Length: 325
Image (cartoon, rainbow, N blue to C red; front, side):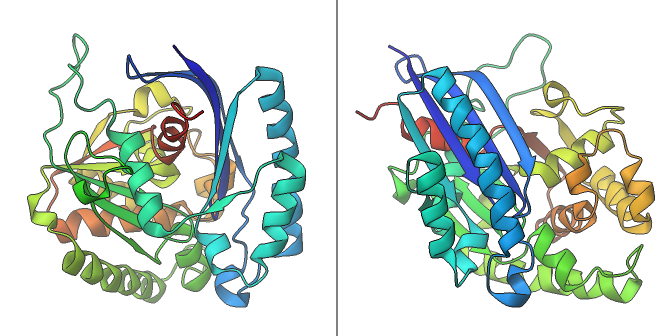
């Protein structure tokens, strides 16, 4: 029997909602509504250590809209997960109390390890199914799932069937490089200078040293990329005039194409990036840094291509409450 659930993912850059009917017995998650808004909750957190009042206000106003959607849909279970920005902030209590008043549930400020496990569950649920007629070959496990967020990037290595409930199946690490954090820290010129790009690259490479020490990355057969930076790069690589998740989901993009798109974005002005039809306006300022993270990952670990996924932590959150009482 299906169960109507609502999942909310509050990251450093974006706020997202999924309302879906989940049927654990049939392994089916049927979307009723997906929403994504750029609220930039993590604005300035890296520099100040606090959530900005205007960022909190933007987030709470959007959560009020989500609450109305959830009530209208009749969801019987709601879970909200908050990530990097609220882990880092000294005034996280202001965020927590605001969410409880606005949404009626407490947000779960999860660790990077938990975040990675939920992302893995959401991203890989479909990858072991038989491909549809005309689709490419099924991706080979083990999977390295990389979720490039605003403040942090999660890496998780695992095989089919791994889940947050069986954490022994997974090896995961969260590192503090993300598209917002890197942009605010390094990419100040329009377009960024070679020195700024080099500094951002060095930050990423140091983080990848930690990833290499923590995970047996060489065991991975398929790189799966999640979140807006990856799907935006995918849309640009596919030459889409407008963003189309049905085209980006499970698209394979070669490493050489990712490198070319990254170079393009780093070389463009803000005005030029804003003219890209498939790029969400809220990502214009930070997409170059997000692309750089993906490019450095692929170069460092030698992946020939990346499989983009539109299903990620949001789907993992929904599955986590699908069978709860």
